Image 1: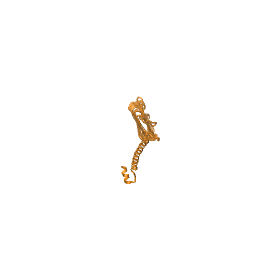
Image 2: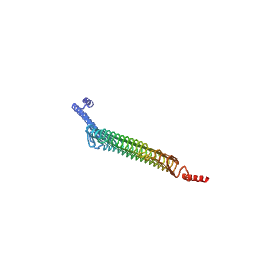
Image 3: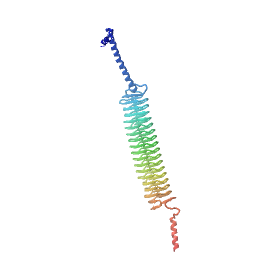
Image 4: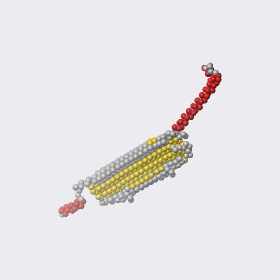
Length: 442
């Protein structure tokens, strides 16, 4: 095939030279095929080396281990385990039974143990761990985030971080505990102990959110910086903060209690023990709202600054402030039930009802520096309307509003009121004057 072509083009070449040339040509073709195969094989090897799959990489950029095959210092797995790490200094370790670990990013690390666990760390220096039975730990996006889901003995725990930086998220202990962070930075979110507890933070920075012990409890923060939201023990309780900075919301023990702050800065909202109690602040700054023990009690503040509102135990007690500043309200107490304390507007007033006592009410409306007290009663009502500097008290059954009184003894003192104090005549003096006039008329 080659010889006739050569004879036609080069008649001076002999048959032997042609035959020998044909053999040389064939040798050249064969050598090129071999060389091409070697080059293709080298190229394929280079791809695997660069990915760190099956061949250790001198740059330590990635590694892979499955079912205990391909174990190294940076990637390891056990039977039915998978570990994949991609990135400079990335590590992945899948221990236990049916575990999977994935890490992507320089310095990222993922670790699993126990059984049926999954850990995934994506981002620079991200860390994700999953332990116990059915633990799920996810760190997706951002940098320097740490996620730990589960511990030995935990069942179905979930911890996750979605973007943001330098966040720490932990869900441990018990059954179906969950902790999550969405964005923001320097946040710490923890759910641990007992079962069905949940802690969550959405955006913001330097927030601390935690649920500890108890059952079906929740702690949550939405936006804002430097907030502390804590729920400890009990059943079906919740502590929540929405917006605002530097707020402290705490719920401790009891059953179906709620502590909540909505907007405003530097507020303190607390519920402690009891059943069905609710402490809340809406708007305003540096307010303190508290329920302590008791059942179905309420403490509430709506706008204003520096107000203190407390429901102090007993049943169905209410303390509510609307507006104003530096007002103090308290209702109830041990053995006190159905007491109501209200303030609307004004500054520096106090309203105290019950303590101990039942079915009493006290209020201050649009006045400042008033002091109103009702109880122990029962059925005592004391109030101040459009007054300043008044002291109004009612201890037994009856009504006292400003200088108006129905039933029982009352005490009303003050500098400012509807009556001109300079012209007021004591009741005893009036009676004496009338007697003298009658004597004179005789």
